[in-house]
Image (cartoon, rainbow, N blue to C red; front, side):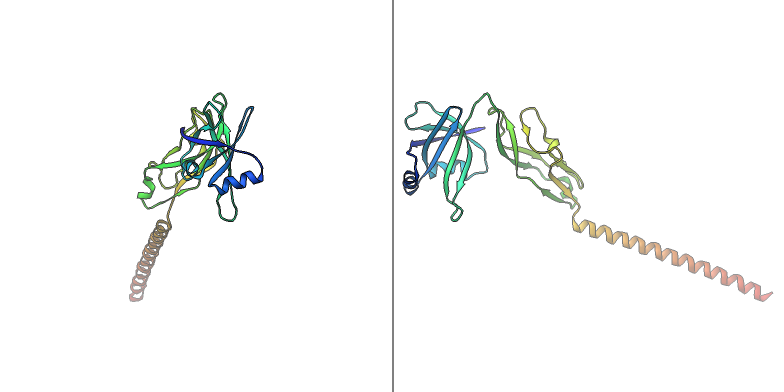
Amino acid sequence: MKYVNIYGNKRNIGKKAVRFIRMSGYIPCILYGKNINIPFSISLESLKKIVSTTEIYGVTLKIEGYDQSINAIRKEIQFDPVNNKILHVDFYQIDQSKPIILEIPVKTVGRPVGVEKGGEYYSFIRKLKVKASPYNMPESIELNINFLDIGDRIIVEDLYNDQYTILHPSHTLIARVKSSRTIIKSSQEENQEEKGKEKGKEKEKEKEKGKGKGKGKGKGDKK
């Protein structure tokens, strides 16, 4: 997991202090963890490094008044329901000896062989909830879809490994390739053509049989 350096300023608590921080272009934050609870503020520009991206980053916080840098993860962001501006951010201190849970983006690699045959690719999940130690936490989960043929699928069980645990049911569908409507329509048309040909053959056979019977009656009449 990559880390981004963020510098924070000590802040006072209370509604007036928080309002002043926001008016100054800063975002009120809090860092909490085992025996730690530090209110601070950071600039909106600094926050964009970890908010305006699909990547997952850890944060190395250097807070005014604290000598040591603290590794943390972004835990929760509160947005204004009207204008969608960031109101507050919670950070959680990382304990290297304990696992953490994060939502990790799923990235696809390749082009399904089934799509080359006219099938349609469907992706159902963009992020997966993952539990892992901080040093084993992946930046993304890579999904190789090259081998997917028409009718094939990828489920959570196919992604199991020793480095982390995916916290979704094993049968959760992640991606699949289905027959497209075009393929279904053409196969139906082919079936109808085959049926038409078979009916035509049957009619011809019946005509041949009818002719044979007619010839037999003619011979009988001559006698």
